[in-house]
Image 1: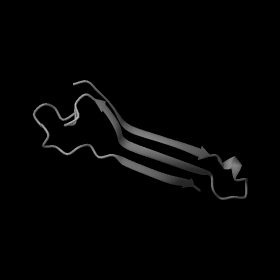
Image 2: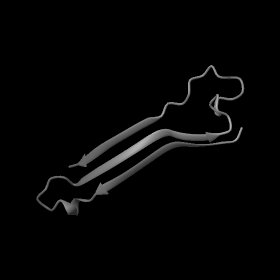
Image 3: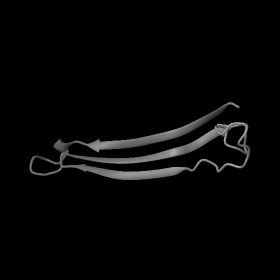
Length: 74
């Protein structure tokens, strides 16, 4: 079966230290959002196309996961 799947995507932005100024203790600030197993385009609707022919419909579908975060560097 032919299919298209977006497995992993992360988008982030880092604010550099020069924005904060010399007196501020933070060297960098990063915001990000991400996702895993975001979508699958396939002609097969009943089963996951990656599981193969032997698995049938007895497997669980791929979980879709989202995350977000902030990273501070001192």
